[in-house]
Each structure stands twice: as C-alpha cells, then as structure tokens.
Image: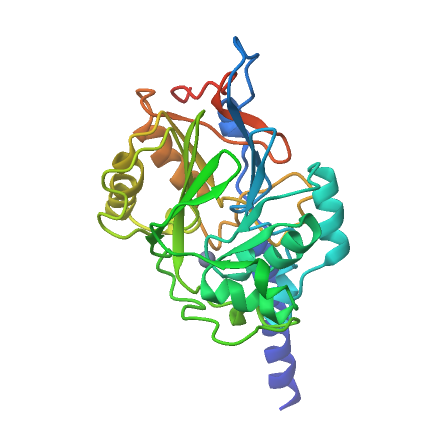
Length: 335
Ligand SMILES: [Zn+2]
C-alpha cells in the first residue's frame, strides 16, 4: 500500500514537472527579426496615428491630440493563479505600466471582449486616465464590480459610430475563437478577486478606428462572423492570432478571407501571440507550444503576404509606431 502511494506521488510530481516544463517552452521569435516595424522619418507634415503594442490585444492609439486604448490588460497574473487561484487587477502594476507607456489621459478604454486577458483591468485603466469604459454589457459589469462610475460606462452598440476627438470608432459584431472556455455573459457586477473563468466572453467585437490619416481594423480574437466586414475598408489590420496555430489550414484560410481580404489592407500586424501569464516588464515570449503554435500561424501569414500586398509586420512592445499617415512604418513582403 505504501509503495503504491509513493508511486502515485512520484507520478504526480513528474506530471506537474512535465506540465510546468511544457508551459514554459516558448518558441523562439528570432526567425521573425525582419518583421519588426519602426516608424519612418515623416516626409511631410499631416495627420498621423501611432499605435503602441502592450501585449495580447492591448493597443494604445494616438494622433497626438486624443488617445484611446483597447483592453488595457497589464496585470497578467501568473499561470499558477490563473489555473488554481483567484485573480484581481493590480493597481500599482497598472499605474507603473501606464507611466512607462507615457499614458496620462485617455478618451476611452474599449474592451474587445470580456475575458480576463482583455477586460479585467479595463475599468482601473479608465479610472486612472479619466476615460470612458466602453464594451459589452459584460464589460460594464466588470466595471460595476469595482465601483466604476456608471455615467462613464458606454455599452457598445454594434454598427453605431462613436466619436473621440478626430477618431471615429465603430464596433462590428464578431465571434470569439472557438475554444469553448468561459463563454456566456457576466450578468451581475463581477467583484474581484475572481476565478479567471468568471470573466465570461460577453460577445466579441472588431473595431474600425477611422481617422483623417486612415483606418485601422482591430480584430482581437481569431474567430469571425461571416459577412460582418463586407463593404468595410481598413488600411492596417491588427489581427488576433491567439489559438490560430491549433487550427487547420482550412480554418486559417477562412479566417484570412473573412477578416483580412474583406477589408483590403496594405498591412497586417499579428497580435495576441504572446504568453500573457508572463510580466509585460520582461521581453515578450510567444505563447507556449503546449497551448498554441505561433510559428505555424506566422508561417501561414508569411505565406499569405509573400507578394507584399498586403505586407506583414510585428509591433515591438512599448514602442509607438506610426501606422497611418506621414511617416507610417513600411510594411513590406516578409523576407
Ligand atoms: Zn478571449
């Protein structure tokens, strides 16, 4: 009996060790060195829009006058707390991250859906920056759970344009990547600490961010609604690839067609490729091989953009890159 117990214990320890090892096995980003984008020296004055990538689908968008942020996820709780514990926004970490990104004022924080890796920190970011909290009814309930003022919450109406300074943001109904986890709606104020799986998806949106300098499409999750983007145009697509590496070629082709081809961009920039259980203060790592196959997704995108129309690029974390207007980054064929 004792031997059996020891054997079971040894197996458990080995299993936990294996899991820990596999969850920390990140593919190298070295093969993609040529894809990192940098702003060009502007040839002429004129409207321009910079985007700063801050992990997952957190993006700081600015024209120098008005700044917006998608998601605003900075806490990035560890694997152990996501799998076994309860999670909550970390106000000190959020404050220092906003400081590092040079963010003091935002017009809006817009959550693309309500999973924790998108919307958990959105109310705290909005609170610190005087922003409106914009998102689904589920995102509104994440705000209510931390006492975010009701008069600064805007529940998104798909298709209805929202004005922020010189930006016009239109949410387009979309669909989440089909992993089946934490789907449904948050129907009452969600008070942290909570389980990661309490942050239910609550519906997913693509965001069209239009400006005199051009239009961005921010597509946070690798699912789609057939025909939702028909007749829309964007110059640059920020394309969520989380989970895409686990799907077959047919799925990837359909995703490309429904989102990228639909809007005819000149540049495609993958997002949601990083391991979001690691801190944003360290260099970003690709999602662990156990959960996704980022190299397979990037290989697919490299193949689709081989002709340079559209081009492909990656945004380095923390660095504002001009994506629209004068001095926009050159997004060419991958080499
Ligand atoms: Zn999600």
